[in-house]
Length: 363
Image (cartoon, rainbow, N blue to C red; front, top):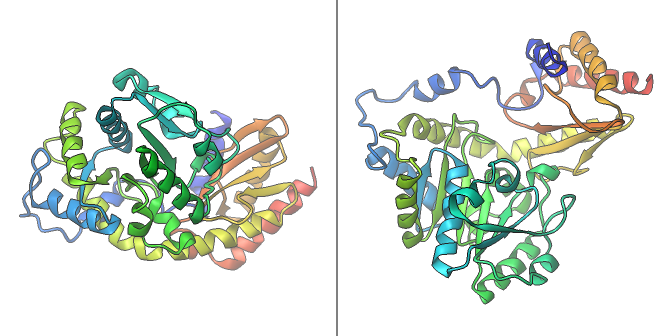
């Protein structure tokens, strides 16, 4: 058995787990369908009341003219960028070096759409206004990911967003929002989702991350844009005969968890403070700006894993199911707060962090 599987098995066996909403099992779908009318008509190839009502609901929430439901965000975002490139007649888009499109999609944007990315900033920091102002290549679209997941979920200040948006509109560059975790940043900015999205020409949001649904995404923007996206959705094979399991799940958990985003945000700050009190541990950001953050520990994977296993065994509290190596002397993992954290007795949490600190100091 691999080292990762040992830690994963131990994490699953703990009485309490701090991150996430819970196990991604069939119960996620069963709960969403518990009170659904079995006689309700399903959607058919992107049409029907169930999909059209949800699309209208999300367009209103995001403050856009229209919205289209997609089975995946990967499909939605590649299509958004293709539309903007075709409209301008320029096959270049700009985004962060650690964008999902760059590191997780097997060069889909390049291979399927022949679009060339222009990488802004370096891997360790956010795209700044200066990066945007300093671009010397013509692009059709700039993509901003809010928050920037791979560097701990960092965010630019709102004034920077406004300045970037104004510059793009002045220069005729479309601004697209990778809002996979948009719902989670609303409490930090103290703005509505619609206010944030007003700065962007097109917006993608995910339903399986902070919302915790089974899958699915929304792509929103102007009516002409979304109508073009439906054509590309068909070309990509995204018009399944029915998407209602995803839609019902997304709608159900959206209603359940959107009101809790401020709670998750405050709990993330509370949990990060506990990590930062431990020896050789720091979170990035030091104070979270959403419900997610990264935990960096100046200990090797091999030395930290037995410590975590002991903490899990002695306290019944699971901190993480995996570790990723940064160097021979450092590793990290990601934390996203959901429904689980509030259910853990505070004294058990304190016990787990006291033990973690003691065992790291003893190395």
